[in-house]
Length: 272
Image 1 (cartoon, one colour):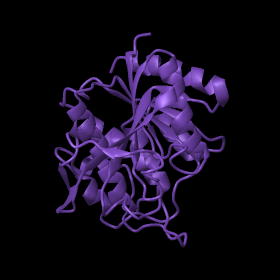
Image 2 (cartoon, rainbow, N blue to C red):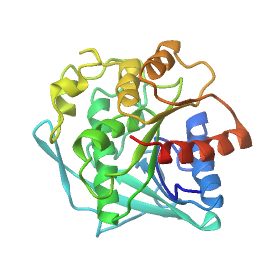
Image 3 (tube, rainbow, N blue to C red):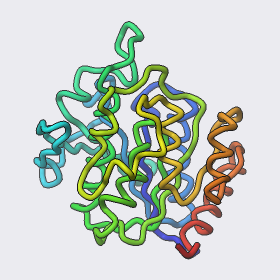
Image 4 (tube, rainbow, N blue to C red):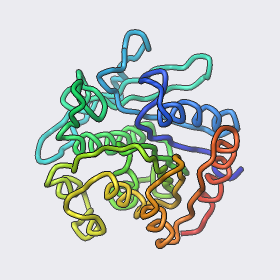
């Protein structure tokens, strides 16, 4: 086993949020990969529906306190953690009063998608990477799940590529059928720009960014793609193949876990 350290950046994890395909994988896959002898870290957003008392979340003061600037506005980064005692692992939560506290996940209580979902995803991706830097941990493979993690490949490859924690990291993006329905904010592509990222770096996506376009952006900067639903949009699969990116076909259960485990080694050892 050549790839030792795997970072999971996911959108949902049971039992912190209701069960779904994404949430079940968010819980089961990191656990199975840890049991196979790899060192892992797992992150998810601290959605407002996460019960902090029941799940015994607590703030990690030494990791919190940074401000992330998005659209010329400072947004404080709060890091919380919960321990899964039986599994001997922790889950880190990215929190912020404006983006996550007292709010649902993709939609509000009436089923209306939040207008700032793009900003929330940008904050989440950058928040995870800044926290991993503070942990002084160098993941060899970063596995991203869900639209909230879709900016991660871009940031790892273009904004954090010279950081010691991510200089040698390979990024895998899991495609799911489930996403969101509305276009993101009109200035979303401008909000993406950070450090050395230029408009040319995101010109492969349309100005109106929907779920498909967001996945396309993630695929562009990923080293591997995993199909995590049966009926993924064929256009996205074709796009990945057009870039000669390895694509792992859909599978379930133990077959899926074993396939991911082997895929980590394949991607982690592939030359640039």
